Image (cartoon, rainbow, N blue to C red; front, side, top):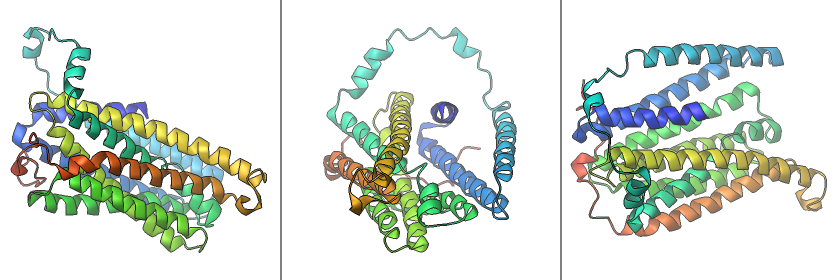
Length: 328
């Protein structure tokens, strides 16, 4: 987790440094597409490797192989990625303290409201991160290979969301309205996941997983572009703030989601919550309902921003996600 989010923040900063101002949204867009393609490919590979006769040894071997491949890919990706710039060593260090820069950056109420939106929305979409697969296996009796493919469904939904949002943003859509649409879709996604248990429908569950990726993709793209438009003078600080809030909210939400599902599930199975809730699904469903509540909190936070477009929002042509003009 530390490596993932450190890489995300540093990668966004590097993209900001090497790309001209007018192409930065397109560069970030391409990075996001490649991330999702990698998730789809990785999930499909795991599903294929675990689709045969399952055993703990085969699972361990798959994880070990993934670790080796990950290490090799990271070495290849980092090799000569950033050229040395000796001119930077000659530049005088900034005299402004980070605390002062942060205070100035977060002073506008629109900035604080956007960061709150990112926090609530990211937490809402992240709490299920470690729960969907065991929920499908334990409650809906899906195979290990079938649950492994849920990541591909979610990433595929995110790719579709990215493509649709790119078309909308090219035509002048407000990024915050795109993010709000993603939050609303997330409410229906988690409702589908919840109702998959009483009707015992793996198909409805898969549809909900794909919708979670679709809504999360719209939300991530919309809030990222809104963050990039916050500060014309310091894009690095705006992107770092977006990444820091997203990483913190996701980490806390994933940990809280897993712990809450275990605690509530144990209480339910022991009969402490009454006969009506004596089911191993109770812990999972509690977390899914909590995520729906967080999505409504995100809607409350983003509502005023989406209704009243900030005058500091970048021009529509600067926010377009077309990949045709990427720097070579």
